[in-house]
Each structure stands twice: as structure tokens, then as C-alpha cells.
Length: 110
Image (cartoon, rainbow, N blue to C red; front, side, top):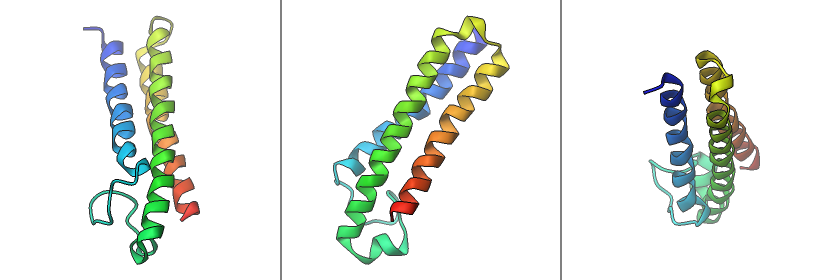
């Protein structure tokens, strides 16, 4: 199997996981807990704050996952024109930067 293809596939899976993990938060199906969601002193202080903050965070992570996924699909379409290392570097940026922005925006919102 082409190494470029392997890298792109390995980048697509986390993007899909971000989207899947965000959906229950967006739908407000995750009650306050110690494992899943934005777990801060402020979010644990009130259920209303928990659900609002995690809905916002879920939307942000969902958008980050979608940006990552679309970016990876674009990389796939252009994989012949790009080197292995270029795909790897851009792909890593496509995973890290949108999620970091989503987390930062959520922390500012909270």
C-alpha cells in the first residue's frame, strides 16, 4: 500500500472520531461526569453551565473535525503532487490546529 495513502487514512480516522465524540455534546446527552466533556470547576458548578459549555465545545470540536476531514480529503485528491513529508506535515497541522482553536474558543466561552 502506498505510504502516502496510509498517512492520509491515519489522519482521516481521528477527524471522524472528533466528529463522533462531539455529537453527544452538541445534543446535550452527556451529563456532568469525570471522563467526558469540558470538565472544569465552573462547568461542574451548575448543570446549566455544564450543558451550555459542552454544547458550545461540541459544536467547536465538530467544526474542527469537519475542517480536518475536508482538509485530509483535499490532501488525498492531491497526493500525487505532494511529497510524503508534505502530506504528513500538513495533515498533522490539519488535526492539531483546528482542535486547538476549538478548545481555546471553548475555554474563552466558559
